[in-house]
Length: 287
Ligand SMILES: Nc1nc2c(ncn2[C@@H]2O[C@H](COP(=O)(O)OP(=O)(O)OP(=O)(O)O)[C@@H](O)[C@H]2O)c(=O)[nH]1
Ligand SMILES: [Mg+2]
Ligand SMILES: [Zn+2]
Image (cartoon, rainbow, N blue to C red; front, top):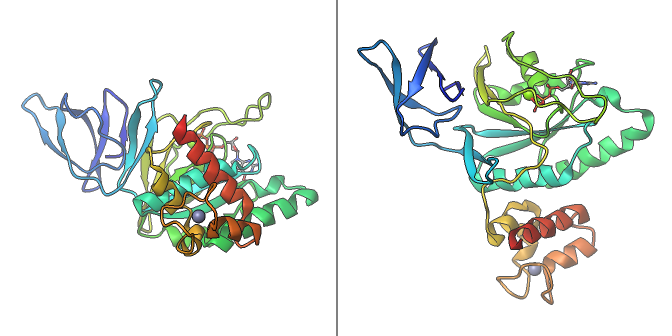
């Protein structure tokens, strides 16, 4: 499944593209799904069944109900930029989600061409922070055509989904990697400083040399598949080696005495912004 436009599905079979319609009960078919389909007597191509998904990204709809958006990716490319400014809380929520579903996560920091000399240390701090936790980071600029060559080898033969705020350049990056002329990118709205929502439907593209990229519509706010408190803690990978040493094995690393995670934060062994984002994610659960 390449894309779901509601009334029409775009399917690919042995390199050919088909327009199809879903069986009425198959409403939640999403980009990246593998489906069974058939040709009806009417000539219509009809998707009849969704095959089991390995991974799925869900987002709340306007009624705040989680809806699947894309499926069957094995790598999440969390994309941030200098403008709109990188949101570490958003990055951390995506990272926790990636850990939860067992997908590889990488970080892309686009638009480094916008970095004035005084912004350079800020970029370095962000890259160093996430690299130190174990996530690979790629500072790039599509405009200045730099940095992308480091990322390309990691896209080979995988299905990678681009996620991140609107206007960070997800579609622009994909446009550089796949020779599809139809990928839509939007100009930054000068008034708000935020990107205009240009990608409206998740879409899957072939990389000519092997692999797939899924473009997803950007978000201003983000909530992933609801995780419980333990799953959130698990998602902060650098906490793991400390949390074993907490006095209580069900320690929430908030108020408990002899908490090894809090001690590691105080000692500088866990970055304090990560710990704060952990608390923020937990707070969001209680609401
Ligand atoms: N200065 C600069 N601008 C860039 C760069 N990459 C992309 N842009 C611009 O940023 C704007 C948004 O790019 P898109 O690729 O549409 O962003 P997106 O993440 O796909 O946004 P949504 O589809 O809304 O989620 C466009 O005007 C691009 O031209 C870059 O490296 N530097
Ligand atoms: Mg886009
Ligand atoms: Zn603890």
